[in-house]
Amino acid sequence: MGGFFGTVSKEDCVKDLFYGTDYLSHLGTKLGGLAVHGSKGFSRSIHNLENNYFRTKLEPDLYKFKGGTKGIGIISDYDAQPLIIASHLGKFGIVTVGKINNMKALSDQALAGKKHFSETSGGDLSPTELVAMLICGEDSYEEGIRHAQELIKGSCSMLLLTEKGIYAARDRLGRTPIIIGKKDGAYAASSETCAFFNLGFEIEKYIAPGEIVFMTEDGYEQRKKPGKKMQICAFLWVYYGYPASTYEGINVENVRYNCGAALARNDDVKVDYVSGIPDSGIGHALGYANTKRIPYRRSFVKYTPTWPRSFMPQDQSTRDLVAKMKLIPNKSLIKGKKILFCEDSIVRGTQLQDNIGILYDDGALEVHMRAACPTLIFPCEFLNFSTSRSTLDLIGRKAIKKLEGGDDKFLDEYASAGSEKNLAMVDYIRQKLKLASLGYQKMEDLVAAVGLPKHKLCTHCWDGTSYF
Image (tube, rainbow, N blue to C red):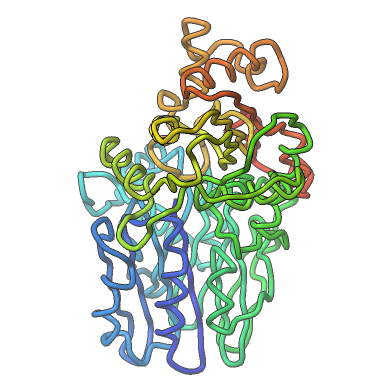
């Protein structure tokens, strides 16, 4: 997906920028970059992170940023960022997070207007360059950002690094968050609040959907008022967000605990203990175990020193290998036991199927699974999640195709928890994964676990509803 961090300081900002961006590594591991402005002007570094970590790749470059007082950084999985742009507005750096669904239409319009783009890796147009082009078509940064947000279909949050400060602009419907942090002599803007605390920042403001804020070392001011609608991605709480992070004032770990508790209240299965698929399933499992008052045990442990996140490699066989190698079964806890696992979601099911097979090989009597969200039926239209979120990869769609002969039939009925077709789909997935039982979260329980009204949440991947 991607995440960004920007900071403006009265003193050298490089350490805060470096570590603040690194704290967003859970959002992606393909590309990482920093851009800094100081007395010597703009400087930038971008590295491929597929075979290493952000800290390791970027740390040797920090010497050239020394003395910079403002900067932006990003973890990105789709295009090389930050970009440094020379324009009639002035020189600026830019990073973006989101998904532009009308890229071709916007680029065709630009080319018809005699504009040009740089060729990028693989010949694809950079979404960030397209956004920069849209911004530069207006008479000010504020007007340019507003113009870009109005034209983009999908979502696009961004940070702009200028000679005077940093613009932070949240996407029109707020699908991705931006939070401002404050400490003595410095301000920061981040995709996640977990990047603030060890650097001494306190949460100052949650930027609203469509809002534009300009940030300097002395403070921040609103340059565009927010819109009236919000559709923040609910999956951020369920899976992508870090447990210590907070969006809209709502903590990720608390939501996961609430999800697990809701699953427990709707369940009557008898098991020896509860486990979570690490890492994001742990919070859900703790909520389940405590509500049921049954033990929580770690029958799978995650080996993190050398294995990256499994959904990041673009090759399917590599993703499966990474997923298998990073989870180590604790055999002494498995043999002769009935185990219930809590998982954030079931996307393709291939990795989960392998893990369940390992449990039975190690002597588990029964393996039950509870997913903290409803069945994924629709691919994400608004954020650049992994390639595994395409329609053809979703295990829910595969079940529908098997049951109906096509993967696009009766989708509303399949999305309705407890309906005849929904139950048939869940049972097909259960049999496919060789589970003793399988249960999914009800939509109303997920919404209640988050604590925001449903119309303020994007739930498109589960029920197909959303604003465009």
